[in-house]
Image 1 (cartoon, rainbow, N blue to C red):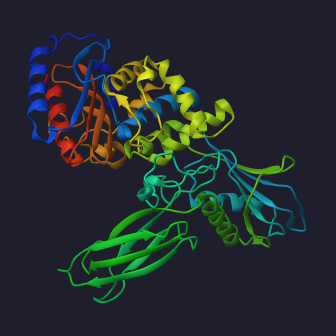
Image 2: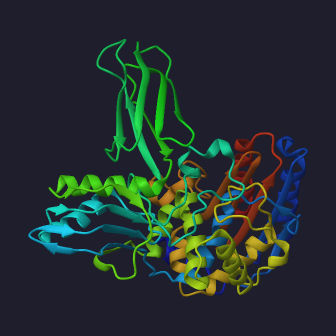
Image 3: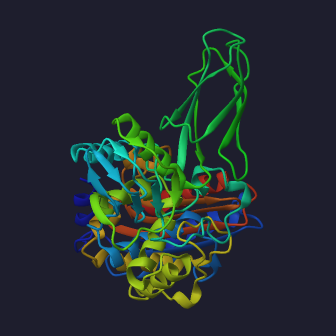
Length: 478
């Protein structure tokens, strides 16, 4: 229904022309008068979706930090380069032979970038080996992540984000805990114990001993304080959880990035093999698959058009960086940020984006060095409407006020008023001192407007969200 209403809005308009002077006056009043924007920089670009005409501009050519609005560039480039039907492959190979239910040789798990691998997928791989009659493997289980380079973090990732799921390491072989596909992380759920004074109950998803949990929590009275901290030791997978949890609390979930996702995936696969009754004599290792190895099983991910939903609606940084490396690998034969960003930059020129005005450092926008003018983002949003994959791109954007997680995404708790609820399709962005939002809005007059709002140098980025919502409400009312 969203797509239908959107495309209906793109048809020739019979409504009165937008009152541009009145709109500009209202927008200027808010941008110049809001005290939370004093000392800050606001870049705003508004265009008519039908013809790309600039309706309003406020510092639209000033380069600003885009935060996760960078993902609009990454998604458009990935759809253009890879295609909406693109899938990631994961291969199980061996250089040995099966003799009397024993695989005499090594087993290889070759990752090719899939960020959606779950424990259940490793179970399927193990089940396939079981159907081949394999009950024992004499060699090692070797993980091959050479599809990408071995640089795990983007160049400007803050060191303090290392343990966060949104700062998780990027590997061609990795795993996710849930269908949100937060690759390279585990989900930890902490619930109160049965009695006051008990330690809290802690559950790790997937159920794995790859991470070690140190439980320093305490269940307290129902009027006690809920305060939990999660700390993963640098270069290790030891996670210490401290704090208190009231006995009546529903608990808390936290996603923690693991150290070395390749070995994480291998540990889950080894576990699946054991659960299927397949004995591994050798060790877990990392290495390169020999050319003579034969493919035993190939797993394919969901299509890129489907991956875009958790990627964009939940603003998944890992997906963004994976897509950058994948573009580099597919086009240039090298899965690196350098090659991938070069491909993205070249692709953006095809959409009329002036790449000479951009500074591109990653695909997610987590870098504070990225710089993009609002006018270039609005230009991109005009151009992509004419692409065959535009419905998938539009469908991936968070929908204002929609409470369903995989529809509303990062906008599910915002813009719930009748003038904007269900009428705004936009990508949000937040890093320290920065708040951004860019997308499409169906206005009161029946037109569809494209907007890009970039607020930088804020004292409180949360207050930037309220300013954005007011600005979009003004646009929607015209």
